[in-house]
Amino acid sequence: MLQLSLGPVLFYWTRQRYADFYRDAADWPVEIVTLGETVCSRRRDMKLGDWLGIGRELAEGGKQVVLSSQTLIESEADLRDLRKLCDNGEFLVEANDQSALQCLSAAGLPFVAGAALNLYNPASIGVMARAGMQRWHAPVEMSRVDLSRLLDDCRAEGLEAPCEVFAYGHLPLAWSSRCFTARRHQKPKDRCQFVCQKHPEGLALRSQESREVFTLNGIQTLSGACQDLRHEVADMAAMGIAVARLSPRSEGMADIVTAFDAARRGELAPPGPLSLVEADICDGYWHGRPGMDNTRLPAG
Image (cartoon, rainbow, N blue to C red; front, side, top):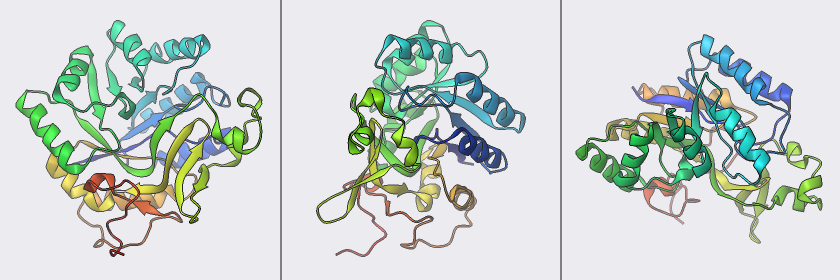
């Protein structure tokens, strides 16, 4: 059966919010939990030791725990933290950039390949598999048709590394050395006063037509709507996808997990236009259309 994973929290929460969230998550029907700060090294409330402590508690409850690396490495200090993460000695690491990949492969350590590594063909997936890759995350903009073809090509070449798909949440689209949330609050990046913590689900960026086009999250830009592939879960399993990733939200996450768990057991209600939480939803990329499209809404 298709496994469910919780991705890392992409937003900047308080220590108490993290603790409460993962205490609840311990009882949710997810097999994999990915922990860690993937966006900004200035978010220092949670140290590696804190993530390891949460990871141990989750592992004792039967979850597979993965530690995720920062996606944009900007300094020697970031590299030092990355080396400590890769050398944690307890949990598998998800590599989100080439420096993490180099650190893990050079040490002969197994790893998960994150979506930001942009694996689009069997040749690159084969290189990663030989370097120690245990699972890979498909690029978030890859359509069902393209991913199905890629999985078939991988199987034809004897590449059996499990594939994970981003199934729910604001889609991570880009990273920058600039902090857009700090700029919104008229603060320099190096003296940001951690204003992104005021936005536990990001800061909406609207078009002149008032449509939420993007979500700003510090140096990260995400989709304005939440991707929601709960009604595609059966198709994913038939394609041979191993894991559906659910990106954490600060509210309503238990209902989201419940819906996806029902979907993988064939117990979800027929498709409808309603959202699981108070947010616009999208599924365009999956259907080979503009990412912000929602194919469950009537045309026009």
